[in-house]
Length: 218
Image 1 (cartoon, one colour):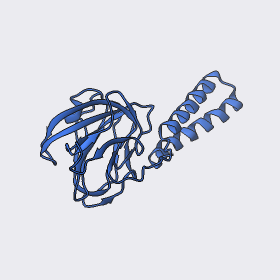
Image 2 (cartoon, rainbow, N blue to C red; image 1 turned 180 degrees about the vertical axis):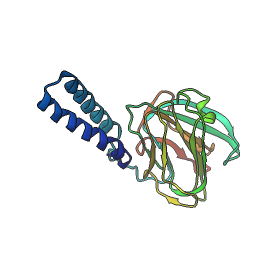
Image 3 (cartoon, rainbow, N blue to C red; image 1 turned 90 degrees about the vertical axis):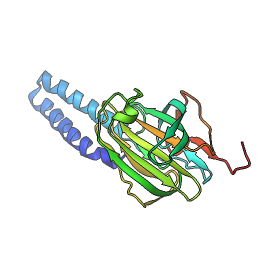
């Protein structure tokens, strides 16, 4: 279970135990209903903050998905903040039922970091990419650079990002999460061959989003 969930789960668990004990003592129907609601809430929170282990591919020539979810869009755009070039933008929608732990897509160093406060539009809306609260991270390994974003959604009111500028990072390692439904975007240079398709389900730290070409491949 993700440590970020403990501060939420523990109060609900204590409330559920108190309400359950009170139900046995007082035999009030309302206490029974409240205790059931509390236990359902505890179960949902434990499920939401689950943190399963992942089989990280042993290949430094790939880009891994930083999140679980569904490929919402794949498009070519000009990225003006960090890469400053025409890139391939991959958007991943994370529903409240997905694992919300985020993982590093490329080994290297955090060369760029910016936190942007903003709105909480629904994560599936295109405007959320620029208007919502987000953490923007650029990674470089000396040969390849990429940019990716953690974007808050209508329910996700807190981005957890443990990264700092100039920090070394390793492919597939955990670095944070976005709570309760959100969006993650990657901006990949064109020397990276995209390996996923629209509407495909992906897993953070396991699904290969792209392969870094060596200059001879097309």
